[in-house]
Length: 128
Image (tube, rainbow, N blue to C red; front, side, top):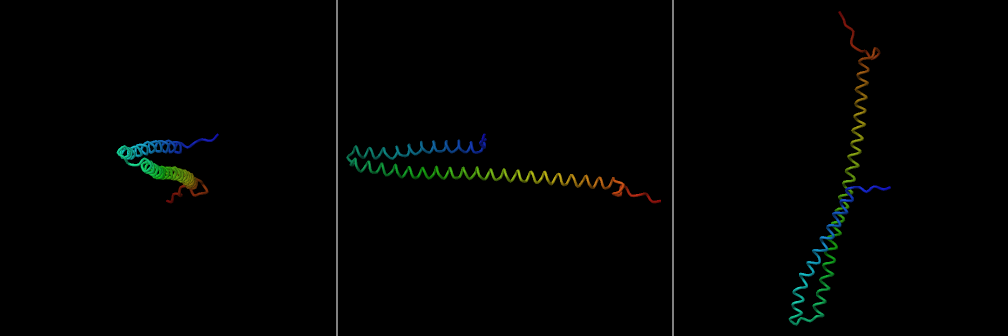
């Protein structure tokens, strides 16, 4: 069974929330643009021209908001990747530190053993 990294799940949640928010803003933006166009149509502006302007504006908004969402997703993916690399580095450093600690502890024990061993010299003999 595969486990999902909590950071990846959080990133997916943030991305989905961002996309939903951007979709709402895009709809509000489109509505705000259509109001004066609809008013102009009621005052005699040609319906075909009004529809052309609305369609053009919808395509532009779709491209702009799509690009913003895409960039946001790319940044989120990059953050997840970098955090993963930092975790790996931290684990590697922790393993190195643990290895260094064991080596240092081993060297300390060896020095202690050498000074207490009869062959290692032990305490210097007293001279009168």
